Image (cartoon, rainbow over all chains, first blue to last red; front, top):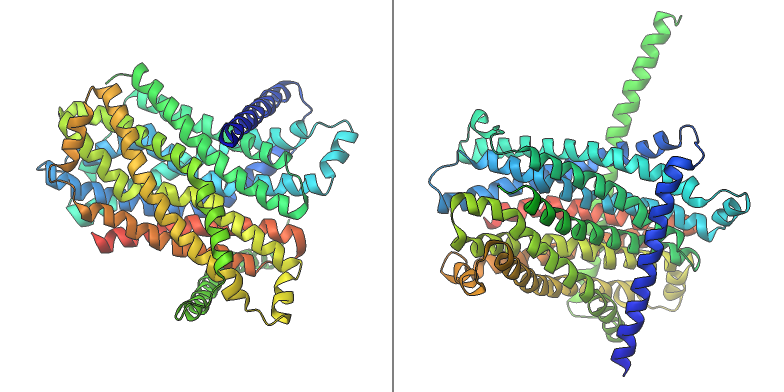
Length: 259
Length: 271
């Protein structure tokens, strides 16, 4: 009995969270076109989300690029006799998936935690209630600027992160496997479909991170400890959202752009 | 129009500003690394011989491991499927359907499962732990423990440290198995590779115990880094409730950066 009850309660909880998340998303879209415009809010958020993540993202993406090329080079050696397509295949995978998904997972930790902590502490100090009392919807005032800034900056950072991964990978290829830069930097395998898939992922992840973390921040309760919980949930749920979106977008791309 | 002297001055202060920022960043990283090192030494001194609070260990293990199982299941199943979706065009191009089991399992066991599990657990368990410790610090509960002559390291930190390391190790095992399961059925759906030939590609000699061990060793190292970062920032919390939020943020960032940087070095050392 108690297992059935637990599962039922979890299902209801999940459905309720899904509906509220959807409502936050729809209202964000609504205010995007109909809301008030505050000068400088988006730019300030772009600085917070983009510029402040730059060093963190460059370091992590650089290291993961080195590992991937090193590991895949070692494996290629066991199956194929030569490395001439390694760079092109790596670039194809980067464009289609890796650059966007890995950078977004990194951003979900940094940006998601930041958004949830900020909005969460506004909720527990009743600043959000004060906003509502002044007839300003917190979604219009707090989440919309972050939404716009996050889409723009995620796309920019993904492109930069992909560039870092590819160049660092080229260096590893040169020093570890004697691949010349000219052989490495080949775009022969990247198709328009790959590019569209990659950019779709950028926009989808960029939209998902602020909506999910903003929702977690707005549903904070229980004082300072609650802010900690909200931050945790924001990081976990944004990462899960990215993995699930990745599955569906990749699957759709596999069907839409057959190779 | 700014006079020339003043212009060079602003240029100089700008340069000093930049140098100061870079130097401050380096000092900051050094301080965190040093603090984590000192914490590790303190933890180890309580571990041999073990002086820890067993009920607290059991409570933490339940909260960290059992409660993380659902997200690990979802993450692992989807990740395994994504691996195959991404590998599918390359496999088709090479006409190597028999190798898809090997390729997907290799990347999963060595890199993806330990890495993604560590990121998820760091978000759930590491951040949570920092928030809890930070709240205790700012409400002076740690000082109360010290007044009662209870060692906070063996009462609070050591159980959490062991809890996080063991949790990550076990969750990586789960994730390995579940990601391969997800990959198997995704390969059947997309590439029409039967599960039997998928498993044959895995076990026909290209993969060994070394590949599994490689990922598990990584998970232990990631667990140690995550536990140290989480406890360090929790204990160093200052400035009331907003300070707890800042600590949580710092933990998440430090864990993620530490995990990726160490991943490179471990992959390189283990080969």
